[in-house]
Length: 118
Image 1 (cartoon, rainbow, N blue to C red):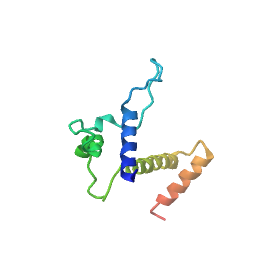
Image 2 (cartoon, helix red, strand yellow):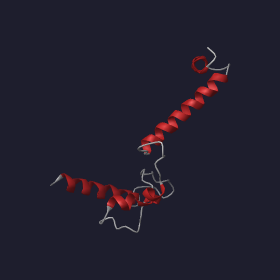
Image 3 (tube, rainbow, N blue to C red):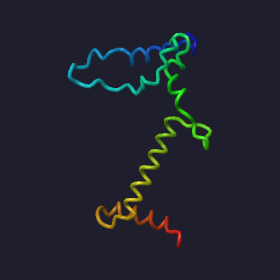
Image 4 (tube, helix red, strand yellow):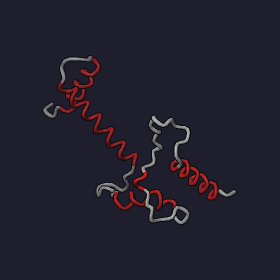
């Protein structure tokens, strides 16, 4: 079996598993999320014709790459969000003078780094 056929079978199995109802889930429990955003599916495209467009069609139509970047995907979003979260934590730690000693050390280090007068 060729690599292309294996990849197609794997993609079809993943798609089937994502769209199949959770038969093993209890009726009053919440079914686990698959990580696929079904809102991004383009139902106007048949999956057997173009699986990529079927799964990503709506996302491709609405999502844009920022003009200052060559690419921008899920991992770029995660990295940006993580960087913003760390920045917020350090900003809070820089002004907090009470509390955890380790947090205070990180805040003092960040404040000294950001001190442009020195």
